[in-house]
Amino acid sequence: MLSIKDLLFPRRCPVCDRPVKPAGALICKECAGKLSYVRPPACMKCGKALREEGQEYCYDCAHKKHEYDRGISLYHYGSIRRTVYRFKYGGRQEYAAFLGQEMACRLGRQLLAWQPDALVPVPLHAARLRKRGYNQAQLLAEETGRLLGIPVCSDWLVRVKNTAPQKLLDGRERQNNLKKAFHIREDDVKLKTIVIIDDIYTTGSTIDEIARECRRRGVLRIYFAALSIGDGQEAG
View 1 (cartoon, rainbow, N blue to C red):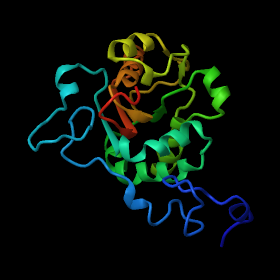
View 2 (view 1 turned 180 degrees about the horizontal axis):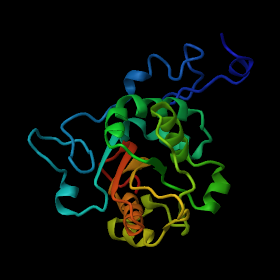
View 3 (view 1 turned 45 degrees about the horizontal axis):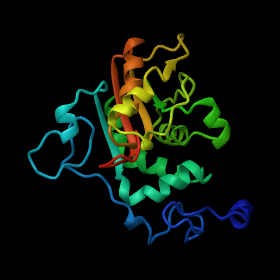
């Protein structure tokens, strides 16, 4: 039975952004098939889809040393670009219920196999958090963690540098932009294995900088899980 809240403020579909049909669902039945999942073969480092069978690494990972151990992603960014935009900038926090469920269902086996001490969302700078009102990566982490029974540490890592948007920069500028941007605040929380949660992965600059700080503070195994992964310069 639908609640009064659902009747007065119907949930929006994360794909078409219209009230979900049937009412009470998390996504419109006809919209579910429009999302494109990352499927094998995939890069053994970053999880980006590969074009050829037998290939182990994408071009980027074959020519660049990343600071993290391994990563996985759920969707091809092109199929969910508008959803991600509304989720981040359009106030659609309600999308987290569906997106977190999808991450838990489709990536959960690998996340649990890594045996993380915690999921760690990529933090926003305090100024950006005040302006936006929420951190979409934290919403994803909390929903995914709740469904999988994995703790979430949202305050353990902070962003101390209010960096320029990564999408506006090239590869080298992204690296310089993020230098010393993150800091582990809670020394009393000792994590040995973490999974960093973010909404988009492209070049890995953000994950690498976080991993670099985490290695410095004693974290041994660092993985990431992203909602989407792109082939171009959409994000960090």
